[in-house]
Image 1 (cartoon, rainbow, N blue to C red):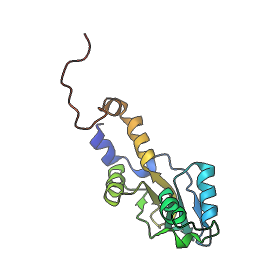
Image 2 (spheres, one colour):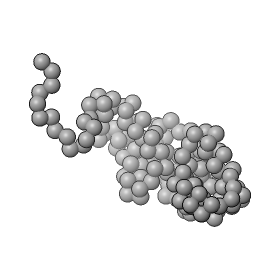
Image 3 (cartoon, rainbow, N blue to C red):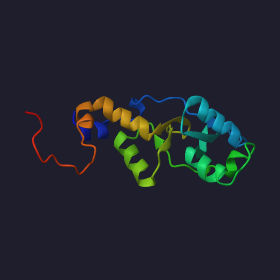
Image 4 (cartoon, rainbow, N blue to C red):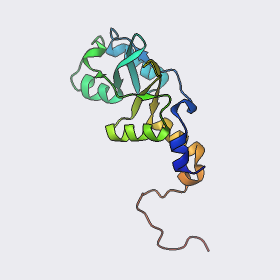
Amino acid sequence: MNLRESLTHNKVASLPLLAPLQVGPRGTVGEAIALMQTRREGCVVVAELGRPVGMFTERDVLKKVLARALPADTPIVDVMSRDPAVVQVDDSVAQVIRRMDAGGFRHVPVVDAAGRLQSVLSVKRIVEYLVEHFPRAVFNLPPEPDQKQTAREGA
């Protein structure tokens, strides 16, 4: 199967989906940051009744918390991004990539058909998928996308 077919046919459910880091809407910035540090993840989903209502990312830590010198007991709802874009477990990997690219997202919550939080996909996990399924194509890419070989390599 070529890259295009794989991205179109493979579903999010076929990826290794880890339990998402999550806090409730009554959580604090300090709790969210501690979770992110413990699991070495770049985001926390703010979930209520099992459904994502917000995202709190490393970018939020820098731009909203540190930039304003907010205390650790600041409510997470004051600094989270509300109503995050989500992907469903039945979406194709190509759909996820398009949604992340269009929205400029590095993390996107994964939900089931009922809208319940299942996981979070990151750009890192998408790249790992590409490397795992297409190592020859990925490892043979030039460092610069528009780079052209001007001379033959080797003897």
